[in-house]
Image 1 (cartoon, rainbow, N blue to C red):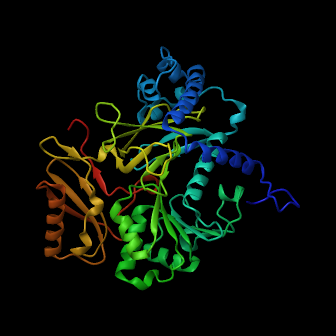
Image 2 (cartoon, rainbow, N blue to C red):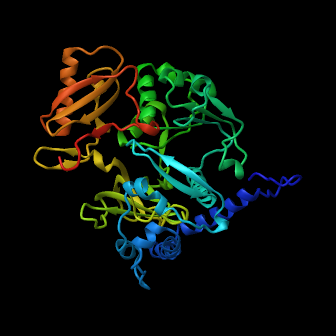
Image 3 (cartoon, rainbow, N blue to C red):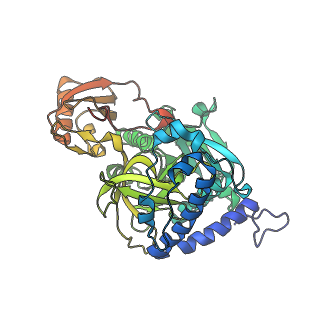
Length: 458
């Protein structure tokens, strides 16, 4: 532990933020092993405090919760089901009413978090210093669960590193930054803008020689493509211990490729700009544990009933500590697969798999809809495909958008189309759209490998 008190090296005394984080981490270490029932009882108490505050100080929730009263002894899910869902459109059109007019001063300063997500539909949420503290505690929990060696170096390739010189040579720091540097000494960190050419990214990685790499799944896939085409490209990454992924859907096939090509595993994290850290991977059993001390997650079927283990549903989140812009039963429009109790023994709820955006179901002419796991496609066995994206334009037509290493032959196009039709399970008409050098990312730097452009009701 890092001491912030001059003259005192051991035992270490952290600074104010470090002391707060130490107190939270000590509680998190205990609460993760509580039975599910005990965790839900604590969530229920915190939910009651949040609802009371929102009813008093938010016009939106004063109206929405006017007749709502928790029943003593009521179960958490039953209590929540009596509250209407909150949509992204509510945040866009009614945020002034949602925001609370008064906050407990102890929650600290307020900042505005903006998110475009992958949809181009911007929202903004006010978050307090308390929310930032919870975010840091959950981030540290993830580091500790994964037993990362803070003395090693960290490389970050992501969006929102927009300094003019970042794309040319990156930016570096003497430590990993917050929250790690509030409690621990660490090695250096290095950052590079996500829009940097993939070949330049590899050159940069060889220069900084990281032990840990944080990036988006799609960007990692492009790095692996380069390594598979020319193994010498990543020969300098022998120090790499783990890849950390954020921001996009992570397919099992990419996990397998990463272990095969780089010899390391992937630790994925599920978070949003509106809420912060939602779930992190179980270090023993895989899958995602919900950060139940900070959020309540509901996975709901189309009939708004809770999913059983193995069922897919919409992710609905309640942020238990945001008293500035309350998010109570906020429908993220993400899809996930529910799971049962974890063999690791933690009582934290479990999500088996994070799928992606609800709107991106594949739709068939007979009315069926399903989530296409396009990450399993083996296009590089047919043609030199560096990157692909599938766009459903209508019930009978899809576009295969490609970035390739060279022009494609007629036979390769035919093979790619046949592979896609076989995988999707319907004889779609396939159009091709070629992008150079890369397929553009969506707002916020995120990338979706499957996009459905059919509007609801069509």
